[in-house]
Image (cartoon, rainbow, N blue to C red; front, side):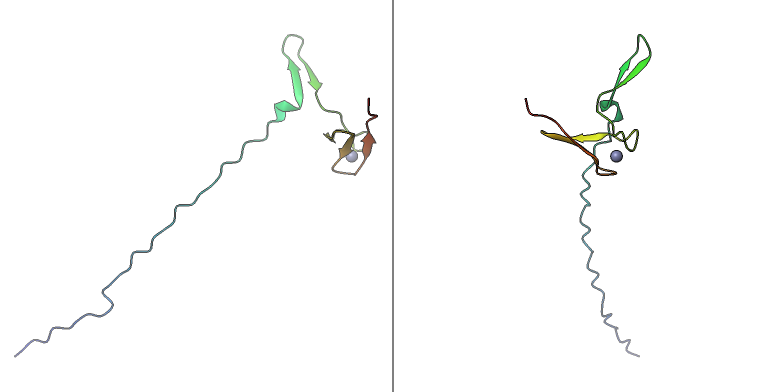
Length: 80
Ligand SMILES: [Zn+2]
């Protein structure tokens, strides 16, 4: 009895090359950037102007204007 060797097809297993995921870490939102905390007196001062319409929303400060991204309120700054 002659044993027939089965040539197993599909033995080649290509190893899937997994590309390493490049994740760019996003810098955390620095809230303290908008506030100035006076530890001595315990007062919190807002560094950025806020929207009078939304109350509390910070303005986006541009060169010649300040605008609220929420309601669109824009305040123009007079050029010196
Ligand atoms: Zn607003």
